[in-house]
Length: 132
Figure 1: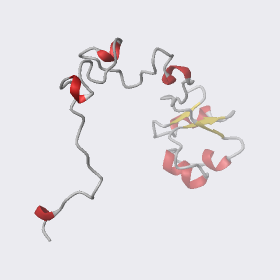
Figure 2: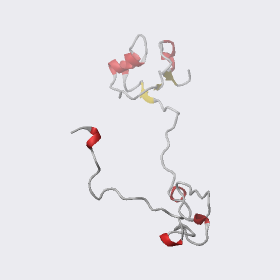
Figure 3: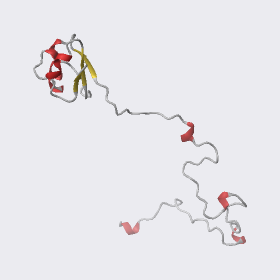
Figure 4: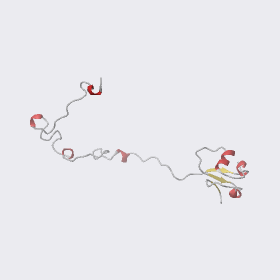
C-alpha cells in the first residue's frame, strides 16, 4: 500500500454547497445569506472578538497581573547579624556565605547603627547601606 492508494474514510467527506447557482438549486438568489443585514453584503468580515454589539468579554473582565521593574532590596540588620559586619569585603557572594539568602534575591541593603561604617568595605553595586 502506497501513499497514492490512500482514500478518506467513507462518509467523512461531502461535496460543498454550490450556492448562487439559480432558483432550481434551492440556494439561488440570496445564496443562503438571507435578505438584508451586514452579513448579507459582500466584503463582510467580523472582527475576531466581536460578540454582536455587546461589550466584548476582554473589556468586561478585570485587568490582572503586573510585574514591577523596581527590585526591592533584601534588608539585613547589621546589629542582629554580626557576621556580615565582620566581613573584610562585602559582596553578594560573601553575604551569601555567612547568611542564608534566597537565590532570587538581587539586591541587599544593610541597615543599623553601624551600617554607615561598612560603606568603605562594600565592593558590589548590588549591596548598599543606609546613609551611604
